[in-house]
Image (cartoon, rainbow, N blue to C red):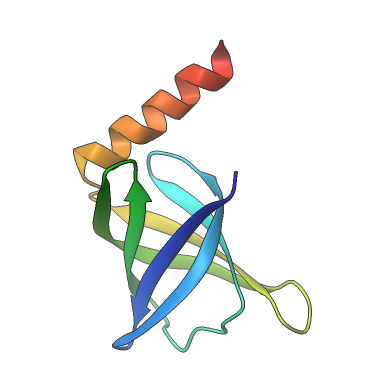
Amino acid sequence: MSLPVKYVCDDILYSGTIKNLSENGMFIKTGNFLPCINWIEIFVPLDDEISKFFARIRRIEKIDDANYSMGIELLDPPDSYLEYVGNLKAVFRS
């Protein structure tokens, strides 16, 4: 998977790429080390709309000198996001 994502940390807008997702979490690759310790606000483009919700950072790992990965737990994701993930799962099961 490779889905663009924007997120806000300490009032600064960052971007990254979602590499894996589920109903309650996602793995984001980014070129930015985050100063945030706990919370970020996520903006995910889903078909015709932008889904917005909060997430808790569970893990940050350095991939190489220029990239980091972030494992996050989603907090109360909207129905549009859950439906999107459900549709993806259905496609990959077929």
